[in-house]
Image (cartoon, rainbow, N blue to C red; front, side, top):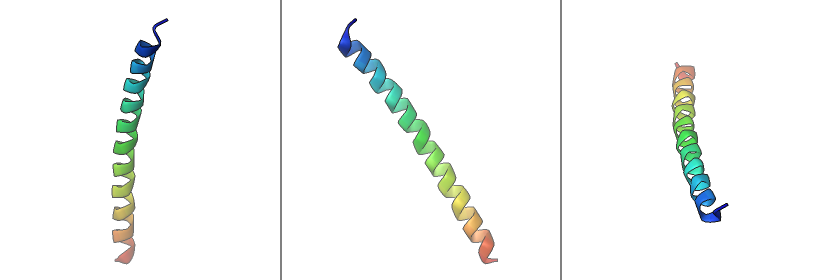
Length: 41
């Protein structure tokens, strides 16, 4: 098995997971800010 090829695939997978997590974080931040704003009313 070619180790560098396996590492490249792993890097791509990690990049995809990081992208998804960043989107999730942005979403959670937005939800949190929305809730905070609505509590003050």
